[in-house]
Image (cartoon, rainbow over all chains, first blue to last red):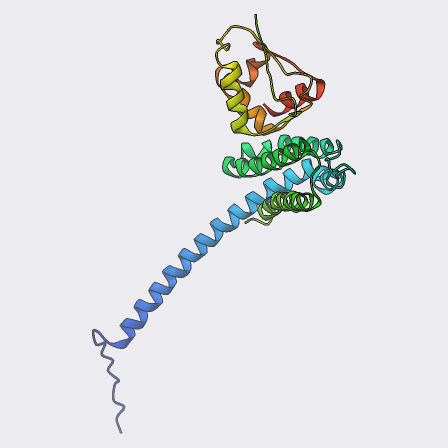
Length: 163
Length: 91
């Protein structure tokens, strides 16, 4: 038998054309995703480096001074906030100075943290000016202070994680 | 040189609140404040502490005119050490 030449005829509109279009689209999507991911990683790394630097300059305040000063926030037997509250408001002032680092990096982030610290300072001073604060109100106050401090830590640590 | 002595209810010993600061400025200081004329602001002895929010509200109009850089060359604060320090730190 003579070998018959195989004739390949590409038919326009056949299924493989659809496949090639799909592969092209997938390739474009993967490329776009890669570019997007690179940008995201770059932003995350930049934020992480900034925050790393911030933690270096504010580490003592966050790890030691603030928690210790918080423990000095107590009411005396007459239901008045002990004057030791000033230790905490002084630490808050110090932290506000340190976060000015972010003013030149990311103003909206800076303003967000700064506002939280100013609100916390205000809540403490308002409470310090009250006389004979009931136990229930004291408890609500402590929960509010702790939540506000936690909010500040969360924002700073969240940024450290690149969020 | 103009001197303004602030007055507060006798039960108040600490000042807080941005809005309250602006209100105190408007009611007790604004009519005496003339740009480029030295002004002395006296906090009475009863005031032993101020919140950042009050400082920012109370001094806003003066900071808008002088900036932080020229503030203390035009405005003198008479108060207890604690209040003076808080104002300096939180302007």
